[in-house]
Each structure stands twice: as C-alpha cells, then as structure tokens.
Length: 314
Image: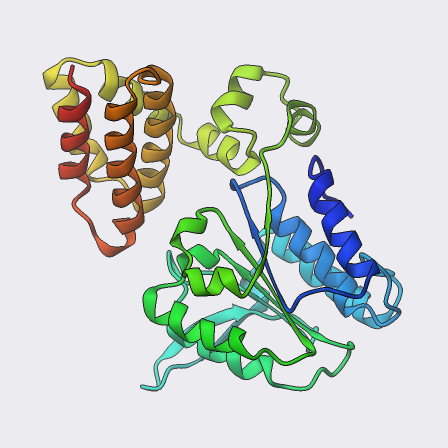
C-alpha cells in the first residue's frame, strides 16, 4: 500500500475489507494530488486478488497482471492501454484504459468530460462475468466530470449493480456529482497531505510552496509548470486599471487547464485577502464556483473575471 498521510482512509478501507462489507460503489473525494488514485488502484488490486489478500498478494496471476497496468496508469503511460470503440453513429471514440487484465477497466475523461458513450461501454462491461478474478473492477477517475447525460446513464449502472462488480469513483469537486450518485456511494473524504508527507513525496522543504499547493502534489506540478499563471493572479489583484485589462485579455486566451488553475489560485488569494469581509467573499466565491463549473461549456471567462474585479474593487 503506497498511500501516505491518509491514515483514516486506510483504517476505513481495511475495516470494510476485513469484515467482508465492501460496498459495490465507493467514492473518494478531496483535493487533487493527495492519493485518491493511488488508493483506488491499490485497494482495487485486493478486490481482484485470487488469494483474497488485503491490498493484493502480489503473487497470483491477477495481481501480477494488474500491477503492470496500475504502474502504467500512475506513470501516465496510457497510449498502449487506450481502448477504443464505435459510437452509435459508427464514429471511432475513446472509451477507457484497459490492459491485459480482463476484469479491470480504468475510465478517464475524454478531454475534459466523461461522455455518455464511455458510460454505455462501462455498463456493458459491468454485466460480464469475471474471467481471471473473483470480481470485476471499474475505476472512474474524475466522476465530477460526468456530463449531464453521462451522469444520468451512469446512475442506472449503480442502481442495481451486479454483486461481483465494484466501482471506485474519484472526484475533486463533490458538488458537481449528481446527489443520486452520491447517495448510492460509500463516500470517503481525503484531506491534503501534511508537510512531512509532502516533503517525502516531492523532496521540497519549502513551506511557502507547500501552502500554495494546498498539500497537493498535482497542484505543485502545475505551479512549477505554470509560474506565469501565478504571476497573472498577482497582477490582476494588485495592478492598475491598464494592467488588469491586459490580464483579462490574456486570461481569455488561456486553455481550459490554465483557466481552472487561475481561478483556483485567485480563490485562494482572495480568501486570504478578504477573510474579514464575509459578504463580499461569499459573492466572489459563488462567481468563481459557477464559472469554474461552466468552463467546459464555453462560459465567457473574461466577463466573469471582469465582474469579479468590480466586486472586489481596486
């Protein structure tokens, strides 16, 4: 088990496994980069282990095949295990990640959303009989990115799941998941990494970077790669009218990932600066939340940012 700094999560998973009470659907949610995917993959290995060993025995055929796929997933080496199919219109579409293990698939968003064709493929897989293992496992990475049609279709798979099929969902923003999906899931919250775990994983002994990253390894990597986005937040908050206008225009040309990062960092900065003005803070956070949620739908980001500036003034 590779999970660090999530002792409560580990205890919950070990308890349900040892008591033989693992629910068919589990939802891991919390900040990105704190171990949700690692936990899902490691716990899933035990669910498929032919010897019934918690976290997997590492010796049976299921564990050996599974480990090679999980390793590629964690390294982001996906090209060889991407599985494609055809939509109802006959168009080639990406469905999920599937290696040599016949009882395991790993569903990731196609772009920035999980689409209904992907969910349909998962539903078909869920009702197949296990071949190598005592059960089947479907891990859904980014369950908060199910588009509305996909969310409704996925719900039908959870209403009466086959007894030998397990779903493990991961999500950053639980608010974006259908309440009916949440109600059918055993929900486990993950917290940020503590500083010691953060330092052990990243090798960085810098508390300022730790605080900026929110204890998230993936956020740290984004901050390293996108220092310009961080600087843009500072200019937007502290610059004069001309600088702010220039910032808004540049942000409007960002790709979706950079826009999301900008809003994440903006929210953190504003919370720190406006903590005593609760009413204003709530208004700004509401705008940020709504805009962030609608980014995949093509919301006008520049108008939202300009509106935020009118709220906070300066």
